[in-house]
Length: 103
Figure (cartoon, rainbow, N blue to C red):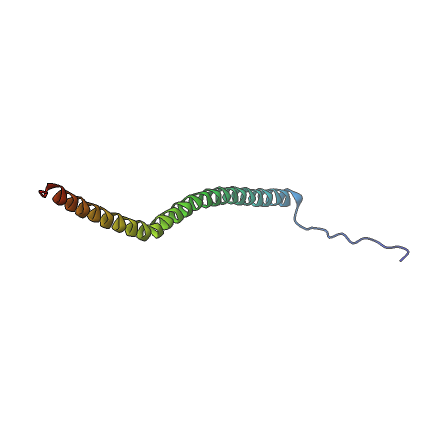
């Protein structure tokens, strides 16, 4: 390998034709890359907003579920209260009857 010569490819197309094509190609991939960056940024923003919105809706749904779960307990308390009020009213009526009775 004494006289190793490098074999560089020689283009037959003149540079006046190659350079504009290479420049156009470079501009094309740059435009595509910029478009992808814009779409990625928009997707990240949308994802962030959707996650925040879903978090709020999830909290509202969980609060509503807790409220609904507590309703039977509240209903039973209201029924107990109504029964106690009825008993109280009955006892008052008995007391009034006893007080109005002549001795």
